[in-house]
Image (cartoon, rainbow, N blue to C red; front, side):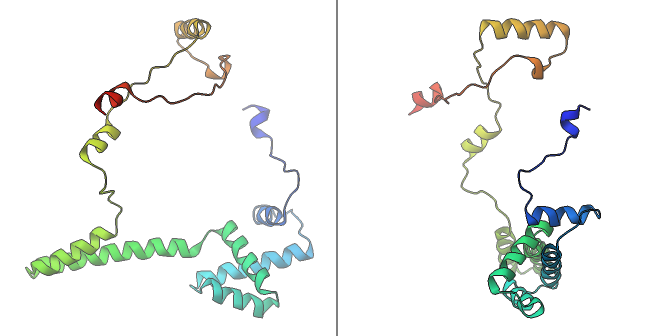
Length: 195
């Protein structure tokens, strides 16, 4: 592996959040007193959110436990979700899965009871839990999955270099001498004819 890939990325200025995040992975990193306090508040914020407290309740607890301002409490919550992830988002996805299973179970019970009206209600609710993309017509769907042909024009020198590399059986696109060029998408001729 080249040295370029193994070098660490150095930031011009390391932020407090960067340093706190790094301290979770490397015990050798020394935090200042203020950074250590912020780290404890962020861990506490995440712990409260894991207990399914709302963001407002978590902010209130942080203000009470650490004596910080409301703005600082909300910043700590935001920083905690940056590092640990948003537990409320994960919970919402979990609730959606449980609801889908419950609607499916309701459908099965209605099916067993031979109650068509309840079957349809359960299926309607079950269907609402998914993004079906109903607005797409069959033609649009067919166009999405159909193979497309793209005509690419290249210079003679590029064509020669490509043929030369094809003859060797290996193409190294990292050493190809190609440059990025701006482009403009043109309308498909068949689209213009049908309009």
